[in-house]
Length: 299
Image (cartoon, rainbow, N blue to C red; front, side):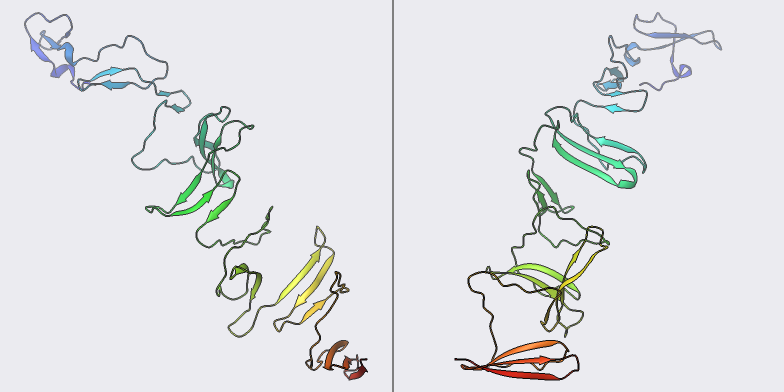
């Protein structure tokens, strides 16, 4: 739009053209004019709330497909670009800043600030009855080309690095945990599920220091944790304690019996020793701390 002021208009003593703007100078009683080519031409038809755009480089305006309503909502039909960043609304507002109609079949991207709940990010196909067919989501490191995370249409998430879950929990898994690789040392007081050498699934407990192995406990609790306790305990030395009875089923029904067992150090414990092909020795440590034994002759 021209910025020329009336006092800066050229003085004229000749007749103005039909498209020129002529003003009377009250100080000199002369006339001043602006050429019609310098004026903003009226647009024949406009859209309510449409943003005015320059038409060419002569300062003329034209209608626009972009609109800005009285509430400050900006609507564009084309591509919206920003040289820097888009800023979400301040905390406490649940405004989506990038979205299309999720009630249609069109793919949509929705980003919004949900206040205390954080920032929402939603990608999908509009309409509750439409599956996320063909959607492939990837997360890249800023400035890099390596894919860090992927999320497929079935909700399966894959990451290339380590997954660390912090906080007090509880952390809920609705499906199985699948491990496909082995694990090296990960640090003190950590439990790891891995799959080593392509043959064995392991649950590994790392101890508190470089010389102490980890221990395990299997705990059974009621839904509100008011009832229940440790059901199975495995010490750092591999000693296993059961809170209930041990039942062995199946067609094998057998235990391995060593030729010699460690000395009993805890009251009310028992060991078996197959000292020869014809002798089985049973040792029992009583509540008085004394270990007694009996040798059974096998036929």
